[in-house]
Amino acid sequence: MILRALILGLIASLLAGCPYDRVHPPYLQNKMTVPVDVEIVLLEGVVSAGVLEPGGRLGFGYRPDSIAKVTFSVAEKVIDEIDALRIALMLKCTADPRLVTWLIEADGLRPSIPCS
Image (cartoon, rainbow, N blue to C red; front, side, top):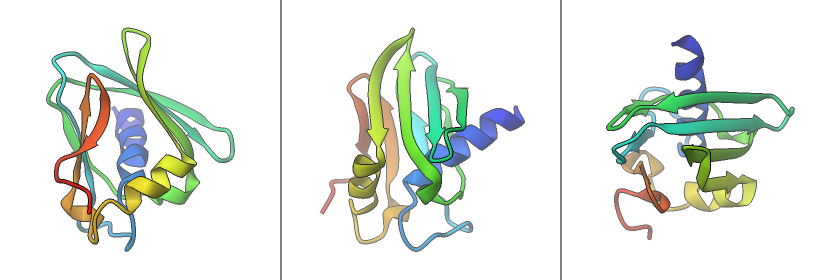
């Protein structure tokens, strides 16, 4: 349970953007009807893995600059993978990234509001 919270915290933090805000963290939500496996590779090479259940929504606040990539998969099939370049683009989606919930869907991640 603690590992799952840490893993999902790291994922959500990559979506936090600037300013880094632990009081109003970003959210990641599984919009699929199946659990989504999440694997995080940190810049130091540490790999963490966890599961976000269907409908699950979590918000945490860890620094995004420690994440090299995040992989989302269902039944061992990768539905999306976010590398450092894509993380940087996601952080620039809106003027205030805290307003965006990142939705996990069969086609991958998408923002809950249009990016500007």
